[in-house]
Amino acid sequence: MKKFLSCFLCAAMVLGITGCSQDETNSEVTTEDDNPVDVSNVDLDLDKDVDLNGKTLHYIGCYDITTAGDIKPAYVYFKETYGADIQVDIFGDSEIMDKLNVMINGGDSPDLIDQRSNSFPYYIGQNAYMALDEYMDTSAPQWEAVSSFIERCAINGKHYYYPWACVIGSRYLIYNRGLFNEIGIDDPKTLYDQGNWTWDTFLKCMTDFVDARKGSMIDEPQAPIGLYGSVANCFINSTGVPLVGMENGQLVNNLDNADVDRAQSFLENLKKQGLSSLQYSVYQNVAKEPIINGYAAFQSVGDWLITDYSKKQVDNPDLDIFFVPYPKDPNADRYYQSMTTFAYLVPAGAPNPQASCIFINCVRLSKTDPTLMETTSESIMNSKQYTKEQYELWNYFQTVENFDPDDLVSDYAYNIDTETCDSVISKLCEDVPLVSGDDIQSWTVMRTSMAPMLEKSLNDINATLK
Image (cartoon, rainbow, N blue to C red):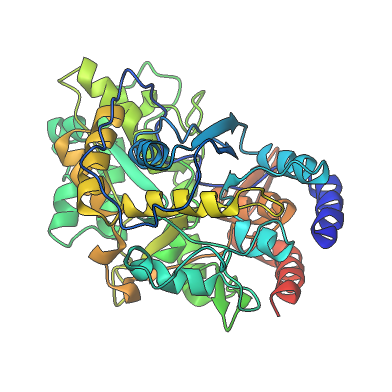
């Protein structure tokens, strides 16, 4: 605890504890009235003799886990079965770890906290969380599919991280399918189903879109664009290589890898051709207007934004918005895709670790217990208002069992300290080439200039993993 507090306070001063999460949040906040949940027919294989009656867990995070569509059924089961409750305090992404530091330092640690992108290995290495071996059974059926990730995140034989969710592809490409069909552009979802969704067909869709839309946007201040939004490291991972990998329990820098170079050069050329930008004109990278109004072919964003489009479709049945994963590298031997996981962690000094672990098990069982899975699916559909087709594809990419493990790439680029995330990773993954005022740095210049800072960060973190 002393090590964590001293390191954390130093990090807070030096790094600002701004967080570098690329997982804005993958759960939709709803209200009780909007999404009633009935778990009377659910009976989870968990120890029910534990006396938690009257306990209230304290959770801090980015969203309300008592009302979010994908968590609410597990929460209701936990509450009704054990007589316990959860107090939720919501903070901005950049505030959470700073808030945790203050609470631990004041002897008032919460019971549960959202995973940050750099929870493992950075914050686990700083002793921010509690090892859960005393309370969790990794051999339980619900953990079988993710046991390798639990082991991968162990430090000195202790297990802190039990991911309840797996996401294939941390970013998706959202597009206006109705407009694509109207223009006569190949449907990316059809190309994906045919096994022909590649960098090449992705580029063709963008260029066909821009060419077709130029005539319709003569009065617009900016030309149509092929892609906007945060690309993150999904494109790099489609080569089968992580920007930052892990080998033998140590983080490895792949900046000089030939496949990484090829992917980054492709993205750089998109930007040079005016086909891509982090933002589009006056619109932020999470704005929906460019897709809906036909200004942009694709938006790169996390799955959390899909629900905003689906709700707009409810009000406008003529709107047809869909999404696809990142395309396959035509030079790769497999269709490689990014693999991310999500968990709740128990902070160091938490007063109710056993109760927290029971809740974590409930949430994990929402992915494996057939009855709770069905209830959770209904809750998600009610809250997110996906179309059936949207939900089926979204859920497919939430189920790790649907994929060959050899096709999945775990990238630790965003798992490091905040300063390096902001100064190196975000720029390398989202702003290639880097344009700052009149200064333009190419991918190769960025790689050379930023490599020393990345290498130092990895060396510092690796020292905590030995």
